[in-house]
Image (tube, rainbow, N blue to C red; front, side, top):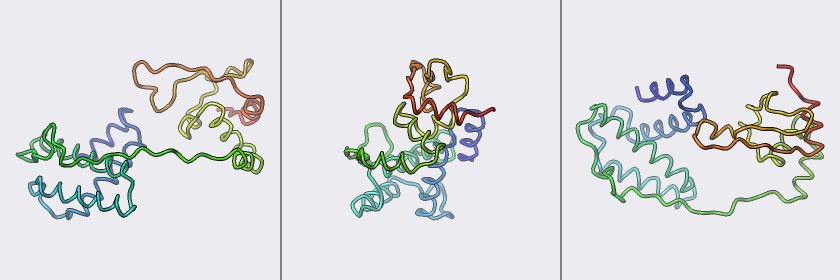
Length: 198
């Protein structure tokens, strides 16, 4: 029922399909760990503490990152709060009480690995035109895959060589700025070449 609600939110545009997918994955993992035949009422503070320990072991064993494990635990916690709110369970486990630190997972801050200039040059020189355009949009405008797939013909100034748009990930949020990106000559050339008629 919870996932059906989330799918309806995707259909209504209130949740992205990209956000729905990990929710489903996280909940299936918890279900498989807890036992698919287990009663909802068996989800206690002790069960959640045990699941937390499983995630911590996966982090220490380098099977999962701290960030992913935290997301997984957050999804499960949100689901259990939903069960309580719709009265599918009578009591909210105490470890989910506001201010409790028992289920805490600290995200580690790491320096992202980046390409060297030589690697970027190799990628660009060996890529076909469409792929090279995508790589240049990422480098030139900081575009993600979603930004590229969502780019509309109307967001491009075909005379000035600019793209004006909000980032796809945050476009629905209030206060997100509309940004104009000035395209490099090669980016603009390939964008005109690969322009869709749709």
